[in-house]
Length: 238
Image (cartoon, rainbow, N blue to C red):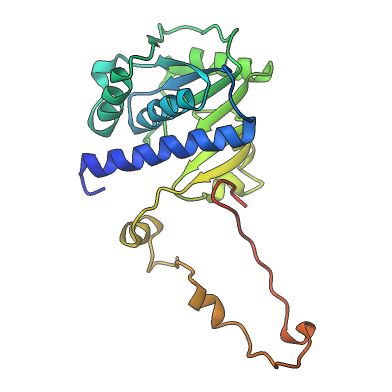
C-alpha cells in the first residue's frame, strides 16, 4: 500500500467483511452462535478485529481474545483496534496459558498472516495447542489468511488471491476448505504482488480468445477442439 495506512486499512475492511461473509456461507445464518476471535498484534489481527465486528452485525455472539495488550497495535492494526474499541464490544487478554473454549461453537484464528516472518513464538504454544484440542473435539476452526503454526483448520479465508500451498494436495490439508476474499487490488499492485514479468501473467478475455479457432457457422462443436477450464468463484478457491 506504499506505506499509506488509510489505503491499508481500506484493504483490511474488505478482508474482514469478506472473511465474515465466507464464514456465514459455510456455517449458515448466525443466530446467537458463540464465536471466539483470536487476534494477534499485526495486520492479521486487524483483519480479525474487523471480521469480529462484521460477525456481530450478521447475528453472532462474538468474543475477542487478544494475544497482546492493545498498546502493542500499530499502523493499520491500530486503526482496526480503535474501530473495534469504539464499538463498545467486549474483549479479553490471553494470560499465557490454555483457554477454555467450552462455550465456543466457532474459533476464528487471526494471529499471524502470510506476511509474518520467522517461526511462531514458543510463548503461543499453549494457546495453539488448546485451539487444536478444541477443534479436534468439534469446535469449528476458521483461519484468516493461513493457519497459524501447525493448526489444522476446518476452513480458511485466503486474502487477495488463491495460493498454491492452499490447493496443492501435498500442502493443502492444514487449510481445510478454502475461500478467497477479493480485496480488489489495482492492477499495478497485482502485478507487483504476483511478480508479473518473471513468469506470471494476468489472464484476460483477449488472452483466451487468441487460442480459440475460428468457428464454421455450420460446424459441429466437436470439430472445434476441446478446452479445460479450471476456475473458482469469489468465495471458493476452485
